[in-house]
Image (tube, rainbow, N blue to C red):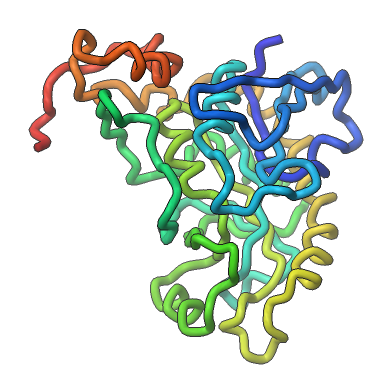
Length: 294
């Protein structure tokens, strides 16, 4: 079964009403093992892949997630549309815990995570000014309005390294940057999705006000989990509503992200590198030359 749509999130997203014909798929990748087996099922007559980024039982910390293996594995199944479902802290008074933000920008504050497929013998520079696919985000906005799920249109997600929550000084710094939500998982995931020529959009579920909100209690895991569980049913509703819309989408600019982006001449790409990135290059007419870049 070829799968064009994937949801990366928690296990509660595939163990939900409306998902049928569920089976496990194990994928070996050049980057090691993904976070878990990929669950493939159907919503209506549309095949959807589900991957718990922390593994079932939440075994993998944000900085330990093998993001490259996860994205490579999904792309190898045929995925081109990728929905991220992520718990976040709210950095704005108007974004209340329990609400969703359909973000359109990211700031990367991670430090130790491999963030590209293109290294060790092959170089590429994809455009990333607009990291979220607006075609996919538009489908999410339409579905959220139709089912009346409380949500905010647009916003900036700052991704921190974790696994600790922010200090109060950091939280206030991010607010001064105009950030809307803070999380630990969407980078480098969104970067790698772009390199894999996959359309990507995030359903950011606010679980708390982070520590900037001095009238609230400090962030605790217990509080986050309680709100997260309440948010899961909303995320499930949104996924069921948006999948048919995604199935009808014709294309995304992200599908051509590597066009003119690969700097390395095809004949100069080592076999080891081609084994890692050939999955993304097979349908790409890429440009030879240095594009004016040093």
